[in-house]
Amino acid sequence: MPSYVSFDSPAGRWVLGVTVAGSGIAFLESTVVNIALPTIGEDLGAGVNGLQWIVNGYLLTVAALILLGGALGDRYGRRRMFIVGIVWFTLASALCALAPTVEVLIAARILQGVGGAILTPGSLAIIEASFEPGDRARAIGAWSALGGAAAAVGPLVGGYLIDAVGWRSIFLINLPIGAAVVVAALRHVPESLNPAMGDSLDLSGSLLAVVGLAGVTFGLIQFGVEGASEPLAAVAMAIGVTAIAGFVLVERRGRSPMLPLEIFRSDQFVAANAVTFVVYGAFGAVFFLLVLVLQNALGYSPIAAGAASLPITALLLLFSARAGALAQRIGPRIPLTVGPLLIAVGMLLMTRIDAESSYLGGVLPAMIVFGLGLAATVAPITATALAAAQERHAGVASGVNNAVSRTAQLIAVAALPLIVGLSGSDYENPTALTDGFHTAMVISAIAAALGGLLAWLTIDDDVLERELGDGPIIPERHCAVAGTPLTEPVGATGRGTDPAAPSGAENR
Image 1 (cartoon, rainbow, N blue to C red):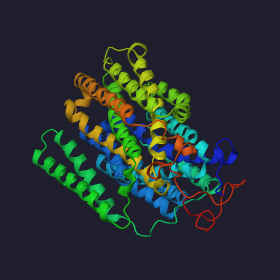
Image 2: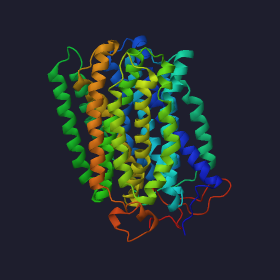
Image 3: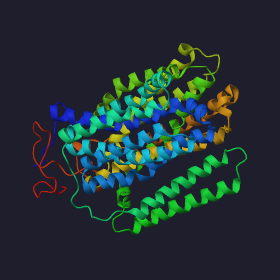
Image 4: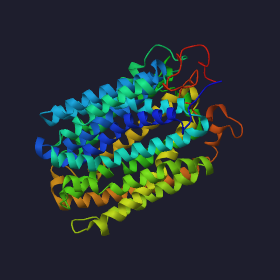
């Protein structure tokens, strides 16, 4: 019989702690960088398009390579690739800290995204492979809550570091954290893999994914650059779309595709990822634009702008795990309908924020409602996507869900400034910035509300029950165990036997 760890056991707490810390530095970095954008722009002389690429350079490689990262974990070991991702991410962070120009910083952020693409799906796959079936939704909820809290507390930490030390320190802080995570992972996280995976890697698929997303992103950003050649942007878009079409063909015909298209035979997997795309796209540009508005329109310092998002941190800590448990008990349909609707209301409240707004009367109400929506949405949507996939595709399923969310944010950050007319040095013009922000929030609110409607129409309440064995298991829609079960109980060392050993090594 396969052996798993309990959520309340010391071994379970170690597994959860290590995976949260590892993925947390990636989540934290994304929001820390946002709070530093005005300072970086001033120091390195970057315009709106440069700031977009500082954000999107990271999102691009994460979105394009996260599927490959999940497949690498399934094939070579989730813990092993998780550690590789942490080391890569940490070294790239050092390069970011040393960047002398905005071009070098963008290149370093692209490399940083490679590490994020490897470690993020590994953290979720380790949780799914290690915890008892009845504890998985709870563990994912805790992972989402703590990881989301790391992302939300990022602006406060970043604001303090920027004020006290300088923007380069927000990258240097990853070095000691990364080293500690590597040591703890080696000591306390069991290894797991899928021995049925082949040895070949889908390099052509990975290349096409990178070219496709890069072309679309470059085209969207280039359209918004003052004086940019529209034919250049159109050519980039055409190359991107063609590469994405080629990616689909390669994945359909390849012997060892990093994205087995059979995973989409589950209607619930498709539905969960459709909701993910719409909702994450809806709030993808919120933090990118909000920190610019708070600092350049309302006059907040970096630390004050970071502190403004503390209610989101608190709400994620308080309610994300509870939302995951509630979705397990009553089904994910209602949480995934109510959550995006609350996000939409929070965005509409953000349209009241302008240069004359006080924090208590203008900013705080929007942060509270928006934070409640995030807390209600993140854990249920992740648990639903993972539970709906076949367990032999668990690492890939985690990668797909992460890729979908990053791609949605990537497109939002690239497209929304263009749609609302923000370009060049507009982020330094309080009136233009505020007007563009208000329009962007209305558009985003509509998208978030559509995400809630989509969840109500497509998500089944029993998808998480299948994880516990309630009712018949439909082959294409049962839960993902995110990896081969541990082959013997985890003891005080937190280690199992060789995952390639015959006993317990096969998927059920």
